[in-house]
Image (cartoon, helix red, strand yellow):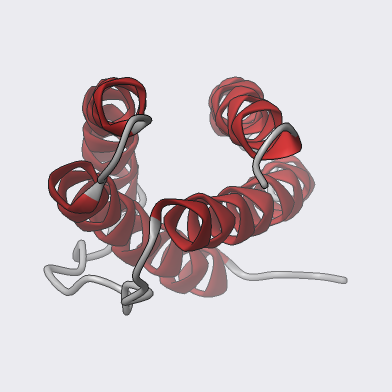
Length: 142
């Protein structure tokens, strides 16, 4: 599929809104974690926040470089209750992020934006790691 630079900017803004949502999600879920797993879950959620903030900063900067205006709006955040439900919501978000960045890297490459494509590949690695860590936490959940 052929994409224009303007379309890529719009899609990167969607990604930026999702990164803002991830920061909110991880911050909120860290506060909501309960029970015996609370210390581990708080640590898990809080350690993801700086990476998501870095992704947001990267995307905002790239949007500016490409001639766009970064969004200041967050995508919706899943409001859930319970540790397992929070992990499941994170898994959904991380799975979507991997798919979105995979597509975005291909789109950037199509436009000849090789450096952007490579940077997005790094973000795919980060989001895949988040996804896999979440899957491991859910694996033994009852």
